[in-house]
Length: 111
Length: 508
Image (cartoon, rainbow over all chains, first blue to last red; front, side, top):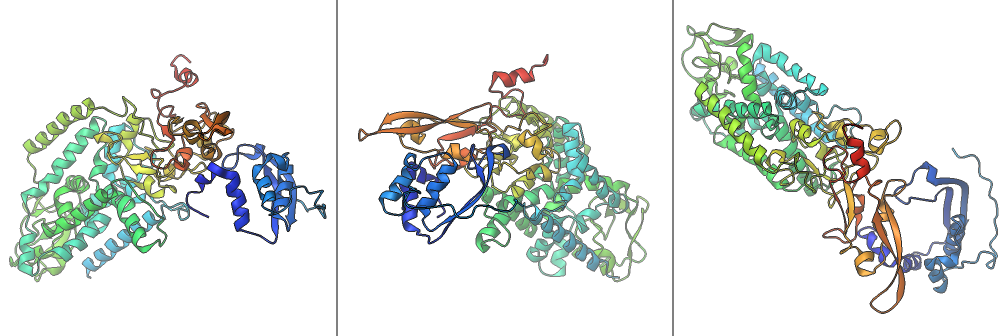
């Protein structure tokens, strides 16, 4: 998706849900080794980054995004695109209810 | 020995080197190449900017290298080195007449050849007044600019790449058109530009008076066949009294002479050669007066260094406008190297004296946050060789280099004017903390629905004027956030904030 992506912001939640409807991955990887908290996505410097050292994978992209939101201290209900994705049946947002559990976490030191 | 073969090889070599260095002026290919080598070894640019700025940029010391062969061989540079000279040589060969007799007539000396000395006089007088305009007609600057801002983008556009990223320049057709015109003029007079116009050729012509060697024709051996004139590059009358200031030392006469009457010798007595250019003092004085009269006209015009223009945003590291205009030779090297195409040749932005100087047009590109390439390639220091730490205001530097300030146009901005969500400018802002912050407002849209919009507000103390917000703004024709030059670091006049003014007070 190239071109005038900047226009997507005029209805960002529907746009993200549309993307998730169009592209249906079987396996999704969330790289949270370093998480940018402020001044993103273009700006930001090292002091805006927290090292989480987490690499999460899931067969449910919506559930994984809900988990990613939790790393940023956000509840899925605060994020309309997650609510919309759940409404469309693209995945779940309540990790416990869906029976998700952390499998292995320990990752070697960052290179 | 076929010296003309060696000369042709030399011309091909230097043209290829010139093109290679220009091609290398690109962020993925720069490595350590001295991409501005030809500009920095140009004695006319050294003298022109040195006189105008009253200082000589360290890099331009290299210009002395070109003066060394001049001491021995006069306008050797024109015949053996100059890349524009090589192109004109080739174009003359293609566009010139057929037959030896026609060539001999085409290569007669003409009084029009003196024009270049008057051009030089005008430029030098203007430089004395502090206005560097030599770059307009200097052959290296001319060729670099035409190729960078017109020919190479055109080649890239029709071939779809080959290492030439997509580029477009305002009035680029004019720059390419002038190069085509210069090449076409060779059909009128062979090597028209070199013989009639070129101020660098004129400078070397004046200096050639001091040269130790020149072509010498033995009157005893000469049979007056004039074959030597047919392929003469400078049209310097090798068959009669040699005009030293016009001779390119192309070696054609020496080679073609059936009686070996012409040789390269230590300076012969004056009866054998005309040592000085064929110019009248009266005309030189007229040219100087013309420049001296033209100068106040330039000064009386609205000038960017007195009244900063909102659209005149200079690249980072640019000197204050007065010094900038005294140093910039309009070569376009910064435009070639800029990875986002934001640096454009000024047309109306900086009045006549700033024609083709670099100006940032954020609709086309933006200043890449982590890029310092324009300062690396500038041959004259009009754009300082600034460091990344200096640009971003990292220690030991206290403040970043600011190019201007962004202003939200609340009459066009989607959240401000139309209650439509958009946060693109805030997201794109590359400084940390961001110079654009969000003001949330609950509004009612046209269908009566309540919604919260995020309205962008610029913090002028943090904005560096990079133009990324303007470049990415979805209001596509006239952007709803635009940078103007106010607040630029390089000016002590074009200041926006009281805190910045306080920094610039003389009694600080």
